Length: 88
Image (cartoon, rainbow, N blue to C red; front, side):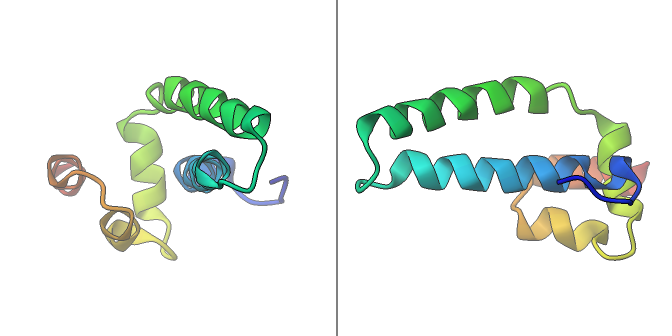
């Protein structure tokens, strides 16, 4: 995940990539119980840190011309949050 790009633009997308990965691992029956349990623990830790993101990080993603508001709609963010972003 290291790259030569503005990191503020990538905070929300990287969290979502990590969430997708650990949720897939937690749900795969072919993985061992240990791996699934670890994925569940990591998902809880990601939620803890994700809750510390704020409107500023969401605005950075919103202002990225590659993402805009469509990113949040595709990811099914709550309408109240996207409406709040548009009003900002």
